[in-house]
Amino acid sequence: MKILIIEDEIQARRSLKKLIKLVNPENNIVFESGRVDNAIKYLNIHDVDLVFLDLELEDGTGFDLLNAFPKRRFKVIITTAFDNKAIEAYRSNAMDYLLKPISPYDLTAAVERVTEQLKIEALAKNLEEKLTLKTTNAFIQIAPTDIIRLEANGAYTQFFTKNKNFVVSRHLLYYENILGSSFIRVHQSHLVRLDQIKNVNGKELFLNNGEVIPISTRKKQLVIKKLL
Image (cartoon, one colour):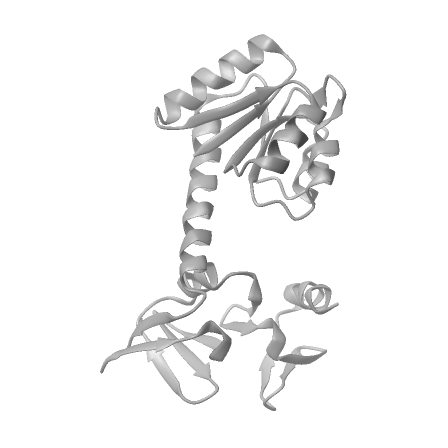
């Protein structure tokens, strides 16, 4: 991964660099600074995978940097000595929140989560044009835009598309991970493409094709928010 360290304490920066290399020697620390403005300038020009971001910096806060990139492509792990900023950090879509002094075990777990998420997103990007599915009888190629919804059936997933329906021997969670943000899990057993949702009413979801499927109580507000 290409990694930035934004940390104003020199010793903390050195310690973090050692830990990052300990987790994976192939990690490439491409830039480091203690200033928000320097980090913003770098990120406006270069693509990176992960930013380790302190909250208290020389010329502002880590949230100043995050606010400058509302639709950022890079992942963020917050590093701080303060334990009262966790909620704000997660609201800013940080992948993780590490308290100083940083534990090697916590750092390893956080980096592994980022790595896994990057793999999922890369796979999803590769599947933008066609998704290859193996049914009991054949391999099927389908564009995600042709999918209306998916339904769990034990260890199997049933696909409902514009032209036909079929069953694939993978869990629903697998497809939830690779299909990305254009789909939403509305129920333990149902994954729906967002642009196929017509209305939400009570415990039911109404689709453009006339289908009515259940929606869990805890998912209702999330669906409404996504539709706004």
